[in-house]
Length: 304
Image (spheres, rainbow, N blue to C red):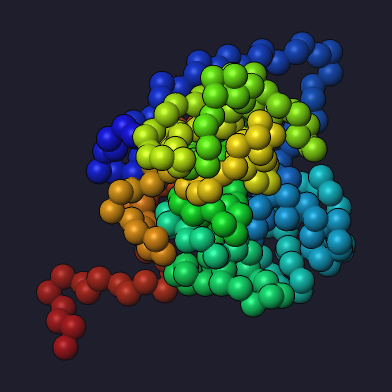
């Protein structure tokens, strides 16, 4: 396996050059939109309530209201709207003033990635620190028998950039298989195999050592389907006996982070990750004193 830097963040790759299409000419001027307005499910995700997919489901279930009326899918809102989720007020803040927090956690086998489990099993959320005014959003999942890197963030937008298939973010795994993975099997994995939910393939595949019947492989995929790595190897006739996620995008599992331990990225690392995701950097400058801030004493006047 390649040696890793002390920081869990790899140097960001050079951003792609994006060209913006010029606005189409129109005989009549377009109706101006409120610049602060955003899609409701995105606004709720940015507020740390949950992922975009979860918020869309909650809106469809009627759990969200805007200004006293049941919200609709696709509705746009601003920080001036009164938004409630299950009766509780949610306050929106501009993205440029909102602090983004990112937490790394080394998931253990036997933990589930869910806030509640009817079977009473241990959940990864029980291991996370409590935060006020926000909520930890899980970037993807790992199944019950898989260990390794998990990323949690208070930014729904960052979680979406890391998870959505259109961004093709790499997930790297250390995979221990029982038996031989022949060259024909390797090529099959690279070319693609048909699974129950469509074709899937590995982006790269490399031997990583091992003895006897157990062999380690380093595998990279670009999707996060349920049990995808295990199902890929099952499809070519090889059983996965151990699975560890070692990297997600530019974030690698720190070697010193043992099972069950967590580590929060510092401000510099978070900014680097946001740049990699092509997201705005929140303004970290101190806010001006409010109306209730203590006044400075007049010159020559004592406080006593």
